[in-house]
Image (cartoon, rainbow, N blue to C red; front, side):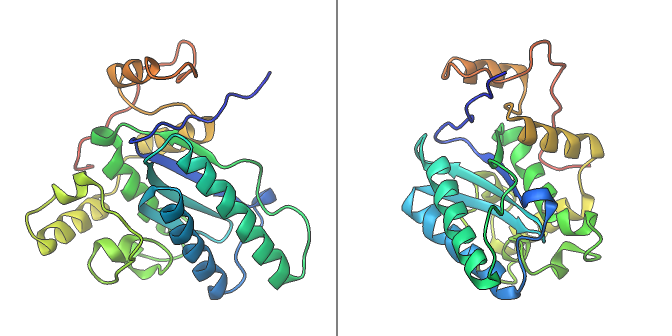
Length: 233
């Protein structure tokens, strides 16, 4: 069966996962993490993609992105992937592939899943038992949203700005969201939708999207989609 083309629409947030081949490490030193972040900044700007959140794990990374054009996200990810592989192979004196095939992505309904996806991304290092709290992990956007560091390539989504009228209020509200976490059913929904490439949202949202593209957006006979309020419980 031919694989579906990737679902990418301008103006919508997309959750992206790129894994190392056979789950092998894609970083060897702190310089590697910094180099990939520099590439994210460079190519996001070049291809008109807003970066809302990220986490770099030892053998994969997550991004939450909104492209301004239909081609921006795939162009960014292609350039990013190729540049990083050249760098990593050169510095590690290795050859061959680094990535586990194509990156995985899903388009998400902002008002239902965007903040939940940010929490999901921030809590990756905690779920992997690398740190006790997301604030202890240096390679994610969490510290940016707590006001403890400035990642200049991060563009907060409008829904983040709605969390409070001042920077302190927004930071405190977001920290509370992350502390509360999200239910496992929502974690599964985010992971499964991203890996499978189906749109993630309520039926009316997916139906509206379907009018904008000929690409199928959900499994035939798929069940009722998961939903999440702004404040996970």
